View (spheres, helix red, strand yellow):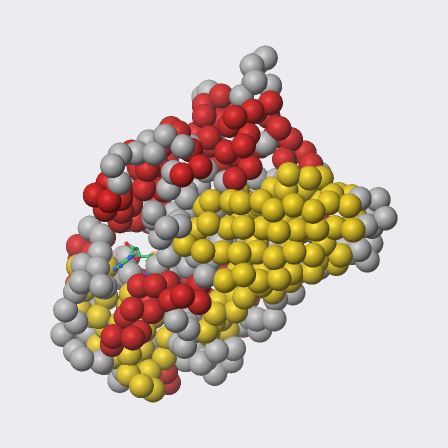
Amino acid sequence: MGRKKQKHHQSPLQDPASVANDVDGAAELDSVTAHSSNLDQVMCDYSVDARKEEADDADEVEDGPSCDLDEKTSADYYFDSYSHFGIHEVSLLTSGQDLGQRGFYSHPQSPLLLIVESNDMVLLEMLKDVVRTKTYQNVIYQNKFLFKDKVVLDVGAGTGILSLFCAKAGASHVYAVECSHMADMAKEIVETNGFSNVITVLKGKIEEIDLPVAKVDIIISEWMGYFLLFENMLNTVLYARDKWLNDNGIVLPDKASLYLTAIEDGEYKEDKIEFWNNVYGFDMSCIKRQAMMEPLVDTVDQNQIVTQCQLLKTMDISKMAPGDASFTAPFKLVAERDDFIHALVAYFDVSFTKCHKLTGFSTGPRSRSTHWKQTVLYLEDVLTVCEGETLVGSLTVVPNKRNPRDVDIMLKYSLNGKRCTASRVQSYKMR
Ligand SMILES: C[S@@+](CC[C@H](N)C(=O)[O-])C[C@H]1O[C@@H](n2cnc3c(N)ncnc32)[C@H](O)[C@@H]1O
């Protein structure tokens, strides 16, 4: 079964993940989505600046760029975007066709593609992710009791949209901290909308700015990356929490969970991975090795799901230590039907447990799609599973040593089934 490029067919927020999503808000989401043409190709454009800085930092500690593809990080790709296999696949497959769509599709993290996109477009698309933005809006507007007369810190404010929501909900003051040039836009947006007396935009890194107050009551942030942890903005939120949050203060969102399931994906694996075995008659299988190592950010059809879903890790943002984002989690995936397994799929949900009604959203394949899509980890083996059999293993997740914004993943799995036995360790790098 092949995958569709874009899907908006799923009913809102009905993932097996145990987040109780906001039903009233979901109805509103429906109407907004109807007017929203393309929610898929989104990335935080301003992170280009941050990437460049990471690249500069990396250059300071390294003698020079590594020749080993396996050792590359996203910082290397900032200047060497074409060494990412996805870019070449785009050129080979699409001359003149739909490059933007396939480009992001093949390699959504590529800084090159971020540069190609106009900043305004990317920003627009991010705000048009209604699952994301509407959930924050609902959390804030439907829980004004949390915000009334409170001091709020917006970590990574972007356009200032979350700060504006908070100001409108009655916050006494909002500090909107944004490290990129978007801070200048945010200032103008705040002024234009008449909130200059409530919102102070501070341009700079959270780790470097001086906040005009000693403590804040609320920290709000949209820090989640692909695979939840890619781009590692979580540490920035934890830094702000430890430095400025009142003892009885709250972090929004305060829970994030990572899940795993297994899918049938034969046609697509053929297209994305086996393709490199024979490219117009030439063996490019050295690129296949690279392709296998790079998790694919893509929308998975729920009909591809072969096994149950497994919760890997829940993080309590109000309490966790930065080191808790590195972990090894065991899994047991029970097959729900006879099928083949070509890949494991990771996704996350976030929740706001301090709301009057528990609110959140899921990025799972059974929920309405978001710009985070899902993260596909292709397996070396094609597993033949029978209903009731269990694929067991563990997933280890750690920030990359050279560039902590990247994520290294180690997968161990084994299957001892009627028709198939397999046992393997695979490594992936999100960059
Ligand atoms: C995912 S965007 C969210 C933007 C906005 N809050 C929204 O919801 O539309 C994250 C933002 O955080 C900013 N950012 C990342 N790391 C930061 C840091 N250390 N200090 C300040 N801003 C940061 C990025 O530039 C980016 O604008």
